[in-house]
Image (cartoon, rainbow, N blue to C red):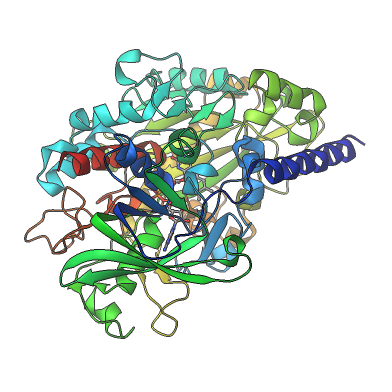
Length: 595
Ligand SMILES: Cc1cc2nc3c(=O)[nH]c(=O)nc-3n(C[C@H](O)[C@H](O)[C@H](O)COP(=O)(O)OP(=O)(O)OC[C@H]3O[C@@H](n4cnc5c(N)ncnc54)[C@H](O)[C@@H]3O)c2cc1C
């Protein structure tokens, strides 16, 4: 009866949302009728593209066009519990089947599907909302790689601050106020006290949040949320100004197909506009840039567009019969955090978010009125920890964590995470809790290439997770640490926390809980952390064979063309990506305007 009521409640909610969209979003963004020229063209109105669109049009001196393949995000996406329902929805996401894995996801025959947002705000419009800056050492390392000190954490801090409207409780000196993206701490965090006490009992520092700045510690989560709702870069940067700025134009449902060059200068973009915006007919268009084209199409979209336009590795462009404009290692250096989950059981249901029990009319009202309660949660995430493996500690004496553990006090996982749930039958008083273990600084690198048999189709994505032996070892340490937290600390012991004694069916040949068992578990269960990055790597402008863009994010050897998004990260940061991408885009915008 309860679940029937919940279902009725959800159906009713979606009807309201559909009606709301119908009322609020008629086609608002018009097509270019002829060839139009703008000072700046931003390709991709995603997480970074919205920052650029906002900042480059801010002083009113320049005309700016955002070309976005998707449309306006559905407002239901901002309600955290509804986010995962959209992961497989082709209207708001693009999905890509990765090439079959040899060392991960073997329980799923090595198949992993990745998703990216296809809408204004990009993946930030449907993210889990987690807001974590990388470690200061991540950025200091970028400064070393690029030989450009402007990437040092201390020099990036103003851009982190600029993007932020911090309303959390932690120390003010690291945070920004009045910026476009509200960052807050959740009030609803089931089990947070237990998590923090467990960390404390193991001798870890309990710090002022993950952004304070990052160090080995346990702490509460911070989110890009306002009043419980996710604030993506569209909501934060564009929505408040989209009708007011006459010098900013946004074309939705418009997919860039090619960058056009005059010699080695980028001068324009070809695009197609899909039928939803053009009365049922696909239309081709072309726009020109007076100053610059900035590609912010994300970790797949940016390298794909560059390669289709003739910028890429010879061994990709020649088989695809694309004339070479500039040979660069586009698509290489693909990285992602590997995600592993462990499921435990505790004896206290009240410390766990249970969608069946907790999502109802009253809690919906609470969410609407207070921005709080179960509707504001992502999988019951309570707290997290950044941990350093012994490998990293042996390498240097700086505190540069390489493992992130997030405690999910939830009885049910949603989206593609649901496959992690164990089939253990639970007694009435028992509830499952989960630990997410992210490999924060993986060594494995993959690549993206055009499919020579179908250049306009989906690219080939070859990311052989855990190919580098060190990655498995660090994950194994992550597992041991997680077992210690849940099974050997007093706060979790008091809750009777335990790993159900049910081995993974694929690993029954190994002694349960032995190292060999866990290695088998990793190979079968490890999957994508959805933090892909690195495919248009930033580096030195001269003599750097791995670099696609220089430290100002200009495509090397081409004028009038930059890449600004997750793809420029030379090495992935030990954190979820959005906070860091916003800072990259803020820095790039300032640098473009300065020039
Ligand atoms: C399910 C999920 C949950 C996540 N949760 C979190 C989280 O909680 N916290 C966090 O920090 N990170 C999270 N991430 C990661 C984070 O959202 C992404 O790394 C980040 O948003 C990427 O930003 P971007 O600017 O590089 O690209 P995107 O935000 O992906 O933007 C690229 C945009 O370009 C458009 N585009 C692509 N090709 C073209 C083209 N040819 N022409 C025109 N437009 C084009 C796309 O439609 C898209 O809007 C999550 C990712 C996923 C998939």
